[in-house]
Length: 271
Length: 294
Image (cartoon, rainbow over all chains, first blue to last red; front, top):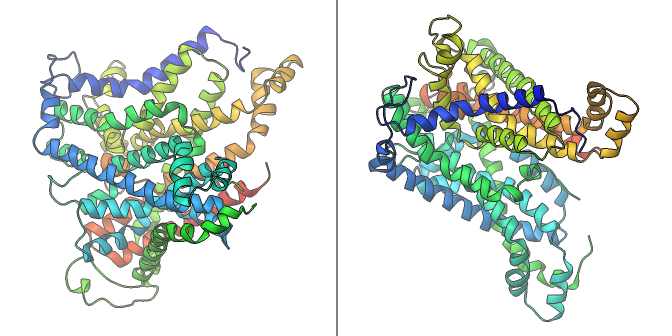
């Protein structure tokens, strides 16, 4: 196949160099994580062992992993439920002002989180919600515009004819949704779920102001606090912790790689 | 849209199903209104003014321009966004996409996975990695500077903004790469083939064929990454905390410091509203771009 550039050895070498530059900080991270005596100095590992990983999954670090899981699974599930319930009608029925609504969702989705962080903090504080539940609710609220757009666009691509014939066969609305729409939309729902999951898993700003004690931290804040605290002393532990923390997001991506494309930025409106 | 009989029957329950989402969206709007409200007060996080606050009109907005912090942060944000997103991510992403176009080789997979790693690793992991990479004993000093005979340099203390920009290019290039890759796939091979047969050099093909055809994709991408980079917080905050001094204090960090460390929530809210307005302007451009027939 004809490429824009002729395949030349020089281009290949250059591309490999780019890949090497991109991977090298990560390679350092992996090597350090398996080195029980890592101190940030390069020049060969001091040994190979899993001590760092054991430290990264025990005690309050282990608790932080669980916190992140609870917060991310909770946020993703709640977001998908609420967004699906609205996205499907939005895709199927005429609602006055629908286009205005969709465009304002695009606008909302682009607003930086920093913009509403003070009111979110106060709202949560007022209802004693500076905890995991509060984080789940706040992140869900902030995620809805994004999830709603993605799912609405997705449902638009599911043919309505099947639902019509189910209706003629005498199926109720609930039966149509449960036996026709959901099975057809499984992949779309999964993608949105995992997207929200990774978003919540990586979230930092909100947990930073919501979680006060290190047993309440999710991993993002846990890692941030740990490297402020230990600095260069505990590179091994920090590297292992980083890998444990990064693992779910990376795995999810490679599992879903085929289903993902840039259309999933949720920044457009179709029809 | 065509209205089926069954949809007419299901209208009621469907409207009810939309309520929770409607509540969430209204809550977001209410939160924004609340931020606007706060920006006209002198409310603080702790102390007497956390209870006995009062309206001070546009004082907070005047302060944006009379105090040093905001204008400095606006400039830092501009530099950060321009060099990391517009120059870095999109140019590197575009170059990679063009170079790798049409290859289904191992090479392409290697480069894609490498670049995607930056995108996939959580912000704080990236921050820790770049902190270590740029430290006195880190990769850059050990493999590049020391062999060149330059003594160990504490890069974060001396070149903080550059480090942050490089880290963000590393982190975000994958997005532009994926977008441009998908866009390039939509250009039919015949057109490029025709240009080649007519004797266009690779660079002429890029400049005269590919760039004009991808104009709307490029504009879309630039606006999106500008908006995202503009409000970016976690990576910079965890990497430098805005320092040293105020060298990397982008607007989001200034807003966070002012609100939660200094405790001046009113002033912090004014910074937040100013950011929202700036993003709003960019977003309107973006929406117009989307609506234009391509």
